[in-house]
Structure formats: structure tokens, C-alpha cells
Length: 89
Image 1: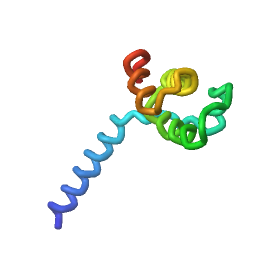
Image 2: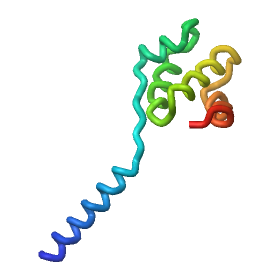
Image 3: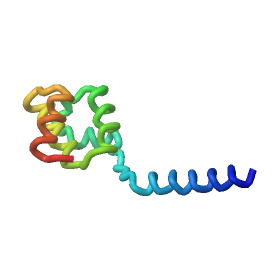
């Protein structure tokens, strides 16, 4: 029994370390993404997907993706790949 409690404690410490190393982004709200899409050309599903995507990427990354999706009529995946090359995360 004593050895199990030590194991549980060390597991808790390891989990804490893992969580501290993880960088979490700030999720842009749907209204914030709509403001970035000045011409209102994005579809609702694209806006929702960008909102979820924003957790992992910077606002500059999201702006560039919106620009490519609206102006160059790129898909979500193509605009993401292009943005990763030009802007990064």
C-alpha cells in the first residue's frame, strides 16, 4: 500500500510537469473572426473551424488564413499550409 501511494505521487508530479510545458493559445471568438472577415465572405462552418484553430495559432496566422480563403478562394487546408510557410505559427 505504501509503495502505491509513492507511485501515485510521482505520477501526479509527472502529469503536472507535462501540463506546465504545454502552451495553450487563446481562442478567438466567432465575433472576433467575423470582424477580421471584413467582407463577410466566410461561411459559418469556416468561421467555427477558424475559431477552434485559433487555439493553436497566432492572430496573425488566422488573419493570413482568412485573407487567403476570401481573396484567393483557397480551402482551409491549403490556406493553412501556405500560411505556415509564410507566417509560421
